[in-house]
Image (cartoon, rainbow, N blue to C red):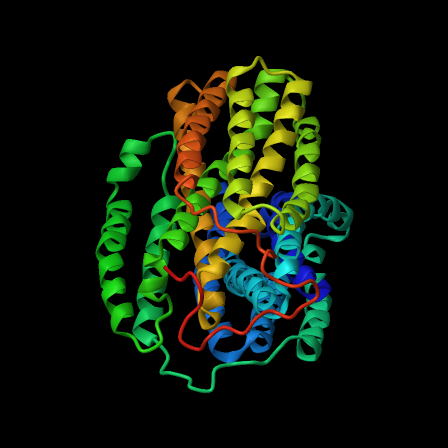
Length: 463
């Protein structure tokens, strides 16, 4: 667990740590704002491609090799960023980091699913969720400490950590793979990569200040058309593949389809967190630095709640915890949107929202996906969930900005956006009601027992 958690922490913290370094990177390499934003796009694009590919690689070749490959890509990318002398080289490094980092979380979740006793899986998955909250606390702090030495140190620190992780993975992680290895789904890999690239590009170029014009620009239209055309083509190719990257039956499973939809919706809502500081500055009148500190109580609550919710999975069904979490998210968003803003209201809303989001995005959804996927596709299933979350986050950033802009921006505009997100969260709560109640994660397991072996051809509750 420490090995898996450290890897997830490193990958998550690399998103949080780049913010403080961005002004120094721009000055050093002479980049404008648009070029700087491409640093995030390069990471997100390759992360979304790396997530399903490395997750499937884990299912085929074993967790140890997949985890090491992800770590190596991340380390090489960090080294390229450190020695970069041009924006193009910087993009390559961030892309390599994103590809490797994309596989770390789903592989870690698959290892837990396969090697942890049923009654301990919920707490273990909850701990994976907790490190994300911890990363967004440690990231800016570590960035502030290392930045005086030079922005390169923010990425150079990844290399010794990666060495420790790779050595630990060779010593500790399982090597089990399926002996009846089928041909690699090369057409599926190619189609999925192009599809995700078009999707990420289409969402990332949306201009919230002039949404209509950006939607009708030829490059955006081409990206949208590619996505619309390639989705059914990819579906047909995967149905014919001997060992598909994403088995169509996996997506057709109602619990997994619902979990993916809820995950995308929660990711969309979560993207609104990035606008909290702007709301605090415009509605309360605090400085940007104070607004950033006002976010910490919510992040701390999310970090505490994630492992606790994981433990509660042994007592309560995942659906119950998701519904409670969504109710808290609704309350939080409506507080941000409808109540006159003050420092106490802002902090209380953040703490409620952090607790609620940890109950939705942490262990419960991953446990639903785990319980409805076969042993040999657990990595792919966890990767699918991660990618739906990423798509939601990309769409949400454009949506919140568009709503706020249409209401004139400022405090009034962002509060209107949070009211809209609150209404969307209510709809998402109703969608979560369609999940089966099920039984607690550890309900059928004897304390201390090993996880039960799955039949080669399937798993319980697949449909």
